[in-house]
Length: 138
Image (cartoon, rainbow, N blue to C red; front, side, top):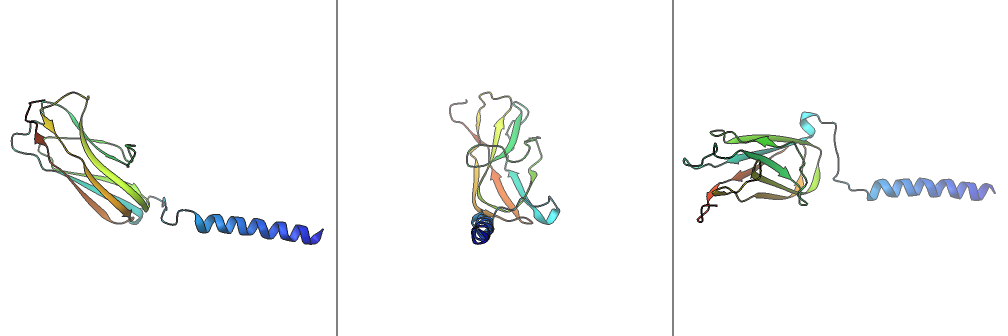
């Protein structure tokens, strides 16, 4: 009986050890301190005739599934740099997009900026968004 209890205890220890070893080793939500935060800088390369006032835009950072990972920020005409912060270190995809809000057709297309790989807390990653005039006017 003592042997069975001893083996059960060792099995539990090994199970917990294996779970911690095989868990995502890069995932570290961190404490939110400055050195643990991933910084995303989104630069909007607007043309002189980009009518930011004709529609309201939001700058959003999402993961590969389209889920918002940090709070969105409103686009302000004339402001070209937007900073976002996310705690942790992880492997994945981050996509910066600029979308009209409310969602209405505009005369501008804004291709997303995509980064993939390991995102390390304490590091800054740069995105660039460039509004492009649609040829059909919608």
